[in-house]
Image (cartoon, rainbow, N blue to C red; front, side):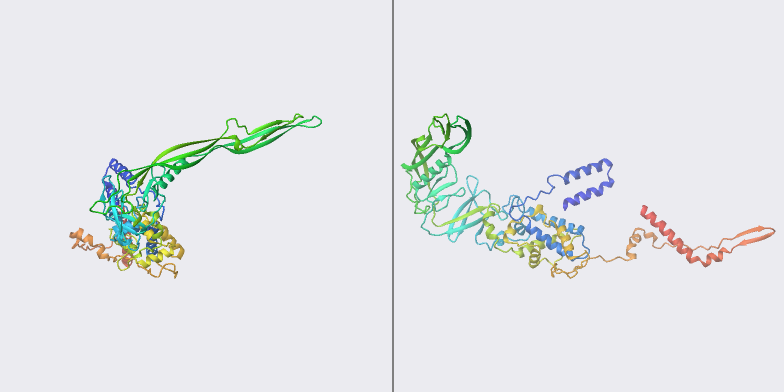
Length: 578
């Protein structure tokens, strides 16, 4: 809004500029308007909910406009721009890198904190499995550690940003397990391993993800098997050949036939066996300090790692180098027959060889039987995890109503506001939003509140379209008649236009009295006049022409009206020409 006033001021002053100055102002204005800073970004949709809540907000205002007299698309657009301007200051209070943003865009959850005065924790108060952290400990590597406490179980999680009130760490707790004696084995889905896995090693021997379990020899064996089979691939031969057979009958006649052979056979293939050939354990053992039980009793006394030697025995069969699939037989009468067949076992050479690999299996020093399985980060980081849970919770319509009302209060208070009328006596209510959302087919949930983004700070996208749709669907015009259609909720009532008091003629001309005070006592002096006559002497006589005088006197009022109209038009033309 402020930028608009600056540009408007520049254009209003152009009248006093020279042609070169005006050209310069036009050039600068164009550069500002179309610069990347001011251009609206394309609506990069968040993969989840896009602009659902903003669309409902636009629907609420559009339906109010439909039952308000004097509305038109220009005033609808004015409302949209006024709301956008009203929100800018509050939205800029949320850092660009805030964890409340999704894909760089503001969400209505962030708007509720910046505009509605809600805390993020209050918005998520009904989500038992969603925690927030606004404090963290800085680590030497530049990461930050936040601590979770849930049902008496504690867990530390590292994140890559320093949390604060408007950029908290969101923690989605998948499960809390207390005091179980079982341990687990398996393959990690991501780049970590569960707390209740005693041993772990890299899945491919070098980098995450991990293999884990409660037996270090099994973990080493599985890791080597994975490494071997992930790099192994048997080789095949796709054989395809057309052979020609010669036929000689009893009369000595010769004929030929062709036959196609098409099959695949193994060229090389291996079968692997694995066995443990040796173990080296770290000489350093896990111990608890005297002043604290730092490690779980299940791992106290274990070495920090084991070097497990796994022997891999490869049983390889390879096709003999002189193998030929096709054999031709010549008969006594001169006929020939060619037959092609896949290799038999006797056509392969079998060899055995072995290799020994060393795999380091580490002891999980974070092992805990009482544990928390959780993910942490920004809203975007936990989106897939919390989606199902938040979609089961109804949206906080009271929070939405507060945000909508704050935006409209600020919008209508702007100078020269000429949009949809709005006042504290008729605020937007939670029930009104719910009704409009149902009419629009929008089933809003807490997921929409936290993840519904705001397109380029435009809180009322497509409001003109919504307004036209409501008018067309209900047969309304902009005069505020509802025509008895129930599609517009009963909660909306006819709102007459607010017109200023019409000034009187004396008030309109009062500025002339102030501008020319010397005219206050000005009087036009009356002068005596007589009707002009003419006297003609002819033929020895004197003639007086005065018959027009009584005629003019009789029609004096008519001539006054005619001249008054003439001079009024002349005066009006002079004023308009000026």
